[in-house]
Image (cartoon, rainbow, N blue to C red):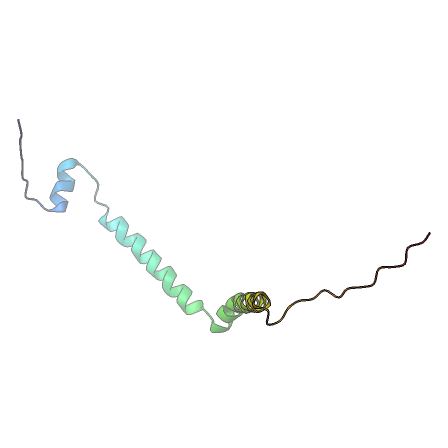
Length: 93
């Protein structure tokens, strides 16, 4: 047996029917608080502070690029790294 039931109601009516709480006012309060925090953070943000925070990362990335570039050049034979061979000290007998 198959039973199909179509109910046409708004979400608010369904929420009341099932006894669920209305969280609309709480959600509005939370969203307003989040919005205020975000706007305060944007206003307090100083370009100099952002640059000081991100600049070390950029320098590290440049060093990483240089390292890989040097390794690739060495692998291609463009700039081989040669260890300086030191003469072995004389053996004492």
